[in-house]
Amino acid sequence: MRRFIELIRNCLTDVREIMPWDLVERMQQNPELLILDVRESAEFDAMHIAGSLGVPRGILESACEWDHDETVPELVKARQREVVVVCRSGHRSVLAAHSMQVLGFENVVSLRTGLRGWNDYEEPLQNSAGVVVEPEEADDFFTTRLRDDQKRPAVSRSDDQ
Image (cartoon, rainbow, N blue to C red):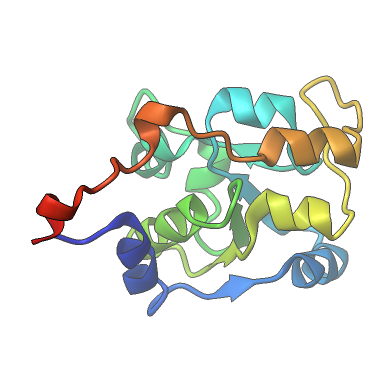
């Protein structure tokens, strides 16, 4: 059985990543660049990179093609555009970029470190109303908060044997 992080690593053999400062440079050099945010809608509404397109990871593949309830025309038409996929930490974006490559997108990369790293690099994020989110608020939003039931159970000595 593979684990989530192993799935990410396997996809990284085919998916290229860029760092936040690379994205800043690409945004300056290519005004046609598409930033695709694959987080859930509530995450996107809370904060995202200005001008990015929000398409949740769960509907991505059907959003990339015509004739589906989830079709996003801007995304379908972006097969030859430069696309940078972003998420919170850079994991969902790797999976999404891999799927998009399989579906024929020619120039797609993932933002390594995700929006956490973007915020750490002190680049702006805005909410759905277009208001800039304070970096401290973004830090708090991006902080992982596991409930007890989400944590790996403690292993007793007899379970180890």
